[in-house]
Amino acid sequence: MNEIRIFSPATVANVACGFDVLGFCLDSVGDEMVIRKVERKGIHITNIEGFDLPYKAEENVAGVSALAMYDAIDVDYGFEIEIYKNIKPGSGIGSSAASAVGSVFGMNELIGRPFNKTQLTEFAIKGEALASKCEHADNLAPAMFGGFTLVKSISPLEILEIPSPQDLYATIIHPQIEIKTSEARAILPKEVALSNAITQWANFGSLIHGLHTSDYGLIQRSLNDVIVEPYRSQLIPHYNEVKQAVISAGALGAGISGSGPSIFSLSQGLETAEKVKDAMSQVYANTDIDFDIHVTKINTSGIKVLN
Amino acid sequence: MNEIRIFSPATVANVACGFDVLGFCLDSVGDEMVIRKVERKGIHITNIEGFDLPYKAEENVAGVSALAMYDAIDVDYGFEIEIYKNIKPGSGIGSSAASAVGSVFGMNELIGRPFNKTQLTEFAIKGEALASKCEHADNLAPAMFGGFTLVKSISPLEILEIPSPQDLYATIIHPQIEIKTSEARAILPKEVALSNAITQWANFGSLIHGLHTSDYGLIQRSLNDVIVEPYRSQLIPHYNEVKQAVISAGALGAGISGSGPSIFSLSQGLETAEKVKDAMSQVYANTDIDFDIHVTKINTSGIKVLN
Image (cartoon, one colour):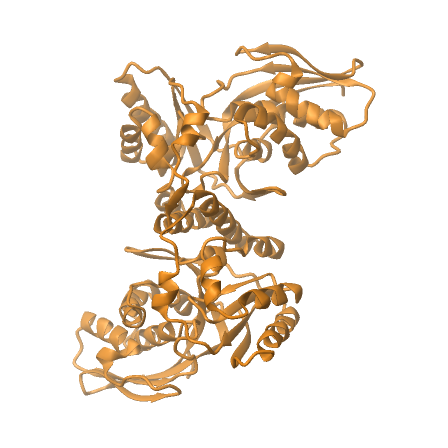
């Protein structure tokens, strides 16, 4: 096999009380990529469709992670990468992570899988760092492993796969405004009240327990973020209205996806997730802000081969 | 049945990264209590052995929780309580919680179990508050339910039962020094670094996952407290030596039990827990501080009827 086509999924990071550590993987939203083994040594990006991104490997997220892996293998051939991008860069649902994970996953398949998923994520971190200016795996981990992932630590990289209840659906709205990552970072406090931190880890531990036991009521009562949301939600117009609307529509909870501007919501059952979609849409339909919206099952297997 | 004898276990609260929310129950350390239905209305403490504690129900932890429950039932009889106390008050392994839980659990058994364990814990919170001057269920929950418990919230009271891996043992040392609860509280910072809070909830979520999956390695890597231990450990002489010694002896981790001065350690297997006992003992044997030490399986059923 010299060529492979893969689907690299969008993801949600910073899942409410799991800020900076918990993410999950989307099913019907993602990029496609073609990875090809070629005689010409090195990493060559030969086609990009969907969005305007750099072709030079050193300047492209998928290229940088591919180069990190290429440096670690000793081969007398190279790889071509084609990127068919559906995930809008800057939307907050892991666009750069999908690219970073895609190239190394595809290359690994072509050369007989010498690396496990954690090792592949290590390479992908280098690509992700090009986009986000820091090494993190918040979106990489769910894209690579699927389901819910907890990044326990970055150094050494330790990723835990948390069970995903069968009937869990996500609704994600992307209001088309720009939030600069630097601004989303700068707005966070350096210190937080100990009492709030305790509430946050009580909720986070409860959420992990709720995911293990498929206790939707507990998931609902745990999906709160008392630390980050009060700050970052200020950067997203109509955030509080959206949140109220989705809760009224029956969602288990909602939060900021990544550093925004996308807002995610989790629901038990497709029917509720569709109602949540209507509720979210309604809020922005009454404004002059354009938006995309997706309803998707949780993707429990992550990145996959298409052909 | 007009009389019941019960075993009310000692407990460890503030389990490392689960500060203020996670506790577990000990198997071979605890109080015994006799609860008796009598014609004389009201709550009457008729015998206390082991330690010098007040007989007046309103001034005794077991009495106060019993009175809270007594007020909620409409009966034309009363209860006598005998307390055979083995858990030293102030040792940090839930002495007051054992008393508070014991009276209401025993009374509930005698009158046909009208209350569930969460409701009984609500009554016990009133008793515990007499001792600790605030309403919390950190020790009550594991004493009542057994195993590991996560107190998600106090109001409303929500207690989660977290699975306990089969081969988990605790070693607990009680160095006989006094730590005032007020001092243990005053030493805590009001604010903590966001980065530390994130580390704490990453560890706590990982610990909950590790308990669910019986992953002892993960439990080991998660049993860290970067928030509270650096402060409170200053109040316990030789704390860092004990911690180093138990880790060298093969323990999964260690931490301050409750607000101290007891130090708990968790191990995989009885053999390691016994080695940890030797290591802990050695540290204090070289000082002029007296100590008690216990090795015990995790008690997965909690408070129980003896006769």
